[in-house]
Amino acid sequence: MPVGSIPVGITGTGICLPERVLTNQELEKMVDTSDEWVKTRTGIGERRIIDETMTTSDLAVKAGEMALENAGLTPDAVDLIVVATVTPDMYFPSTACLVQEKIGAIKAAAFDVSAGCTGFVYALAVASQFVQTGMYQTVLVIGAEALSRVIDWGDRNTCVLFGDGAGAVVLRPVDQGFGILSLELGSDGSGGELLKLSAAGSLCCGIPGTSGKESRAGYAEYLQMAGSEVFKFAVRIMGECAANAVLKAGMTNGDINLFIPHQANIRIIKAAAKRLRLPDEKVYVNVAKYGNTSSASIPVALHEALLEGKIKKGDNIALVGFGAGLTWGAGVIRWAV
Ligand code: ACO
Image 1: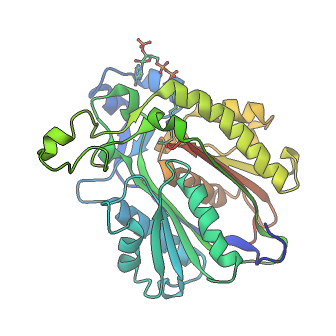
Image 2 (image 1 turned 60 degrees about the horizontal axis):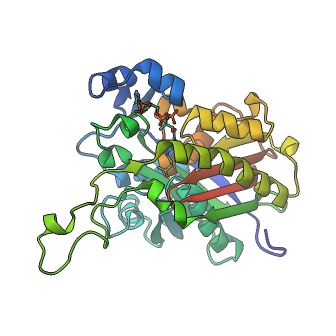
């Protein structure tokens, strides 16, 4: 953190997971897969899926309201809403604007951030600048996804991996020595092809003289992923990125009380933890319950770790994510409340 800037920390968290549980056994009836394969290769036992009436902003609203309540604030205190998502309700208006209206954050500015599964870390980094500079006092940062809406439920390579959900945090000024101590962000657009959703972008439609269908030829309506390439990238980058964030905070891994990695695959988490030489009890894992919820996974894990009493005031928490872009990001936070 730059010298002389206002320390900024998380003062409230909230989550929303849809009620509908989709089990591996149910997926066995949809595609050629097995509970055993999914559990062994990914660590995922079940995931949550929104019903037909819900959207990403509905999940974001519930998580955001819970975070505000836990921070002891009402929506009219919010200066800015930043939503990280790759599954917005629509291209525009932004999901953040939909949330602003739905929660009644009457004075808040609002915008979305798109950085794949790293979205929450990117949003945290962007949002924290407003508090650090003194421009805003209260920022609501939400990671929210309805990945079930962009998955081909006939593709076993992807449909077993993802789930829906939202997690939110409130950022506020905190006491000196607490809050966000370091942030590390990165990207490599040359890996963009490894994980993408190309439908309806400016690459593929709206060409005069063609019908919508013709101009979209060759582009996919659903998320596409080169799983094993993403796997290798993820293991390498999670280790590097987390190590850099810890170093920037002037710490070693031994100073970190809890690592909260993006929850994509238990094998990725374990391999990255091994590279960082972290004991299991220092790494938070809930991928078995929710699958990969992209931007929501880190704030959901953070909230659950707090509920389980795994984080207390003064603890050093490291967050680390990777995702489409390709992107990556990590941060070290000294818990302030
Ligand atoms: N059930 C049964 N078999 C399957 C399934 C399934 N659900 N999915 C794939 N297989 C098969 C494949 O077809 C392949 O069969 P083949 O050898 O006959 O061709 C075999 O299993 C092995 O496939 P691999 O891809 O080598 O399996 P791998 O061990 O790499 O695991 C996985 C695949 C789970 C996708 C893994 O590569 C992974 O987790 N990758 C990272 C994915 C990820 O994190 N994505 C999110 C990024 S974040 C974001 O921004 C959205």
